Amino acid sequence: MDPSSDYASDPYTWEGLSGWKSYRTLRPFRGMYWDVRRRLPWYWSDIRDGFNYRTLAGTVRIFFINLLPALAFQLDMTRNTDGYFGINEALFSSALAALVFSTLSCQPLTVVGITGLISLFNYTVFAITEECGIRELYPQFIAWVSIWAAITHWIAAISSWCDYMRYITDFSSNAFGMYVAIIYMVKGFQEVTALYYESNPMAAYLGVVIALCYFFSVVMLEMVGTTTLFTPSIRKFIADYAYPIATVWWTGFSHIRGHIRDAGLARIPHTRAFYPTTDRPWLVAFWTLPVKWVFVALPIGILLTLLFYYDHNVSSLTAQAKQFPLKKPAGFHWDFFLLGCTCFIAGIVGIPLPNGLVPQAPVHTDSLTEYKDTLTRSKEKDIEPEDSDWVQHNRKVVNATIVREQRISHFLMALALVGFMTGPLLDVLHTMPRALFAGVFWAVGFSGLTAMNITQNILYCLTEKRFVDPSDKRTTLKKSRIMYYVFWQMLGVTFSLAVSFTRAAIGFPVIIISLIPLRWILLPRLFAEHELLILDAPTADADTVLASMGGRPTLPEVRMAEEKRRQQAGDGEIGDGSGSGSTYEGTKGMRSREGFKDEEEKALEGDEVREEARRGFQSSLQTGHA
Image 1 (cartoon, rainbow, N blue to C red):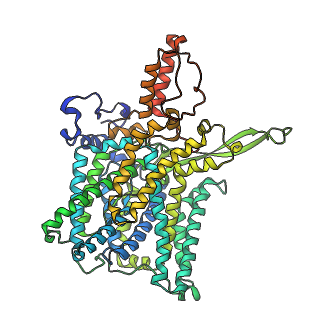
Image 2 (cartoon, rainbow, N blue to C red):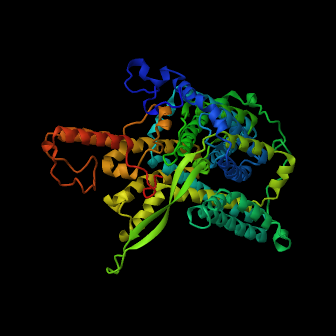
Image 3 (spheres, helix red, strand yellow):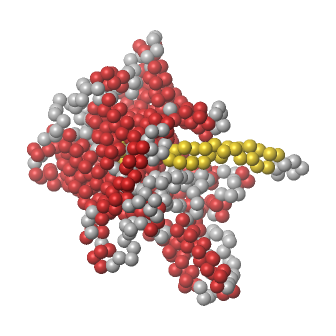
């Protein structure tokens, strides 16, 4: 396929097919074939386009944002799996995923590594094996869970089931992102709490101070990029290197001579280079697990596939979200097949299974994006007092101009992760205080919390009405309707959190997946078309992305509204909207002109309706969609 292809009319589609050809499972490998064919012509440019400064900045930033949470989750898994997973397992897992996806994937911008969800999954399975009296079989059991997960990953990819991810909108992806961000925040508090049990009170108190200072340092340094301080290059430099600056500074602070160094801070444990943490070979003897437990591992493996199906693909979607001006095509089916391969390898060597990172996923793309700060001038006049004069104001407008889409940054990160498994760099990791990783949890979680449209909508509803931007489309909605929409999102978040802290935690992927049909079946019956077009939007709406999933779907609220309009076309009047509680004042109670329009006016309006149905409302920072 030529790189200049029109992805809006991509040959890979299931629309208009009938009979056996319309069933994805009966046409295996079709999605994978088109993914590779679509992306392969870009492979050389993926390498050539990597030789620029943004690649260096992106490599450093994503390396730290990948490495630090991976080590933090490793500490969590070490405590909850009796030391089975350690530093080298975390580094090996992250390096394996980075090497595979940087060289072979269709979506090299999607960073794959250790997430909080696989950490939660691993030690929940460990607790189950303890309760079943097979604690000594945990390595073999979790290996078979991984093997079954790999097989079901391959089946899903070969059957083109990743197509259904095109139905992901901000409703479900933001609810999931909020859930993950809260998990990060909770893990930070658990980490500082553990310091009081595993070290002396003085060290624990100092650890809390370092964790808080690290958190505030990262947040403040990254905020510099949004200010008007210094020059654009300096602002971007500080924001790009916020994590390494804070990490080096507070690690050095923990070694200051005197009371600080003598406090006995707990640090990253030391381990042998390239060896597993426990006394075992890298290859797990999975063939020694009794047959009964092999089949017990099957349903758990399927649950793991459900988790990765949603988590990894949402990570890919957010890494290619609507705010990034991407030009190169995606490839969800092929990448999910690769994820099955890494599941299999990771399972038999006894390392945590890597998958797409949320909420870090868009950070890599963001760090590779060239932003242009534009000076905008406007005239403003104070309403209070009324006799004030017009005053000219200067303000900064930031526009994303281009994304450096390439494989080099991801590949360099893989080499760096392998390098940190060597003796000298393991010694460097040993100098880092464990408390610092609580700050890592908080920094990553906080960035996720503030970016979600749930947070943006709540803040909008709390804002004094007279200071709301009149151009914000939410001004056409009642705040009660906005909060009702947020209620349904938070319902999914709450149920997921409630399950995650029980023995039923391995079942939380079912709750996460259920958010998709909830959005497409229930919400269009509870909200009007106008409301959902403002409050929600597809997570990724670029044709280059949607081509991999069979094209752009029609939103259910748009379809229902069109059916209702067709039914009412001859009545000369229209109702209040397509769902209960419509607040669109522009149509409520007004008499329609439908019977008085000429053919040209009807044709023009029809084109506008179709375009709006296809695109939805444009993304904006005010609605939290950008």
